[in-house]
Length: 247
Image (cartoon, rainbow, N blue to C red; front, side, top):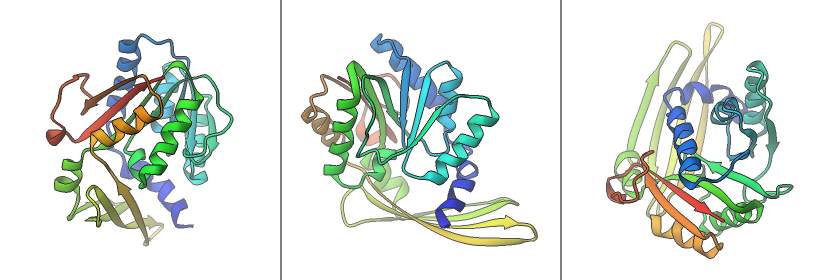
């Protein structure tokens, strides 16, 4: 399966991802909101890199992803590091079996993979219904400006002995819509095997996400940018925006 290959090389592709910044941002938000947090659910956890790091801090972690291949990689890593995490395969638009959760997180632009606003609202509604009173939801998304001017119509590439990729990002018909066309060459013994991936993302202006959170009855809503806990920032000059909502 093609996606099985992608799960295997995902960590190599994300080797420069700012996981430590996501961890620090999460713990800082918990401290700022002064909410007791024991259990954290990581929506779209992928191969579990962030889930495991938070688990090492003592949080009871649940990792949810739609890809069983990603979860298989995550479970193996957690086992090797002796971290006890519950891995569950679910569509984050249809969460089941959760009640009175302390904190939901969804990072690395997972929400941008929900390409329909009605579906984004479904995710927000599901999270709200599963949170305890006073519970928190933290997610991130690309700013429109960053998507339009730093991702769309650009080509990225990397070459190593084990893996080479070419990544082309093309803009869609709607503002904030992106299609990522990725070609990989993975080394297997003495030859390279090619496989391809197409990813569809959609981001929206901050006000759209704010209105959806309000419509789902979240009480306290804040936005931050680029891992900084500042209430005031320029949406136009930001790369990654964080939404924090409290039930």
